[in-house]
Image (tube, rainbow, N blue to C red; front, side):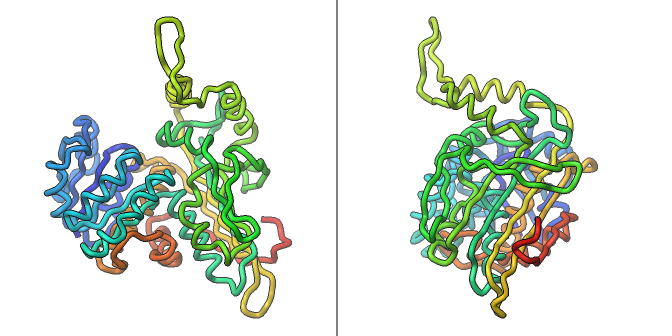
Length: 389
């Protein structure tokens, strides 16, 4: 199985580790990035004769085309705005294509490539990270195991293990992606119909085992991915919220109300800059904090089983930083799912051809088994809906 990975950043490192050290059957991996230092660090971190690094810009079709042609699967771990074009190139060169997604408009463009992908006999599967990605696969699998489903709740957060001021948060992925999640409208299902609600809305409290205790969750965009369109009409109520330590939502809401999320440039003295650029810079500077992170995930589906009994099916994951490999929890829980899917595609286990929703083609129980094989603790539970989670 030959893989092409675009991007040698945090998620790219976790994907590289998984494909070389945890995936069975990898015969070759080419990693492309424009940063030679990142490539050198990656090669030194996990030396392997199957690994080759290439310094190139992901906008350089002439370089990528032959690499895609030689790859069973191309994985994009670069900024989301490149993904539609990269998916098109992968199709033209006969390679399956996966990405970490996160932007609904770009994902929609990728689904417009369905016909071309079917003709080429390859699969395009966007949104294969944590959320979107793993959360949706698990949510769909939970709902599919009920005779009738009343609600699906997805709650996910990447948090510092040791929260510190100023926001009890540390940056663990793209700052631009983070801002988008906070400010863009969020797709939900209400009364069986697809609707949107504002980002940062519908604040709630929830509890996780100590040392976390009481946390908060609120609406953010992108996490539901294609799940609403596949469950609308079958599930009356579906939503996704991001988990944070208490008080974080109000801090972001204040910044938004003050206009710091606005992308339109303003004139300040002799300088022209957008408030969003300033915010992104400051978040990067101030939230690049020491210490390790943790990923919390809770997916629940409530409804009735085949016997007509009201039940709640739930999955909970608490994943920590890997000290031995130097991989953050966010990198693990974003990189491992896409690597698992890549392995399934390359091995021919999942090969529907065309552009597909990950939750419809990736079996949830298989994903759970592969995560457990990688040392991720996945706790499944069936309970009465009236019980505390």
